[in-house]
Image (cartoon, rainbow, N blue to C red; front, side, top):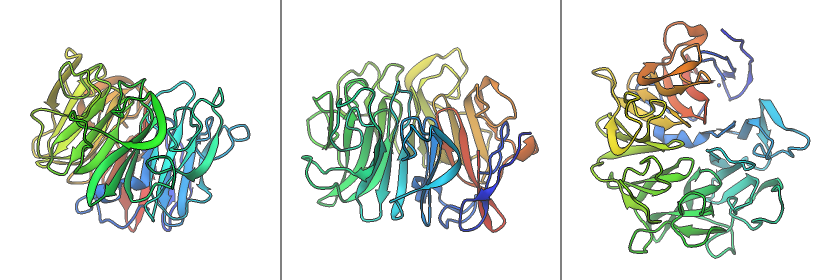
Length: 403
């Protein structure tokens, strides 16, 4: 099913694309196989945005997909899209990437974390989501090439960043100061119920996300952005959320304030993921929990449950332990202890990897192998774009990206 397009994508291996079922797109960092590798160690090398992909290789950052807003760091007037990955100049020292997630009218942006802890950004910048001045200077917003983001106060370049994330027109950075890990945010703060927890509608200078007492939330292990909400995993295994709660995606009933608040009853969590209007959490025991909209079965529950703010356990067969999760617009992917890939939720574009498109699935199903034969195995990392899916798979001595 579909055809394979191959080209050199990594130091070893090849990258190809196959429509319908999973098909290869080549080698993330060393990290073992689907059983022993830790996908959380190198999840930042691959970013699946709304309609584009970024990949960190040993020699720099590569991108492909839609470029109508300059999200591939090329002038969109001359290159509206690219189907073949190409290197983005000036990012040879990048160690992680982030791609805007969510549907906006005319906005896309991207981030790269450099090895020295500084941040580079590109795309469009109407809300200051690039971490540098522009705001509403032009309409439609103009493309901005890669450049460094500013530090708090809008002066020097931001430094001491350790992780990055891009939501719809806003950006989040885990920043270390005085040995404390906190989250800085910048960009659109008004269209997502004050997801950045500050008073201003939008701003480009990074500011900390705040607790209800008005103090910065510290001890943050990781962060993930949905379309208009954010999930913050603390080092103690608790989950905190900010932003929109239209379908209970914050995991808190009737919350309306702009501060970060803890999701009740959710503990011992090791990873979080945000979708368009839903959220997913992975606990240390390998169980997966989801809350928010269930319109496409993305909570793993019967469609009679339209939405909920109470975390629901996603049903997997007995003995399956999940090691990594990722959320798309209205679907999710999970990687189990044996390197198998599971998918559930919307399948309108074939993003569940079943060789067809159409009906959603509230029950997790195994992604099929290339040509829709057997099941995809040996995976070491999965990433969900808005309505597409990616999986890095170990094949012999190569690591190959399936899409």
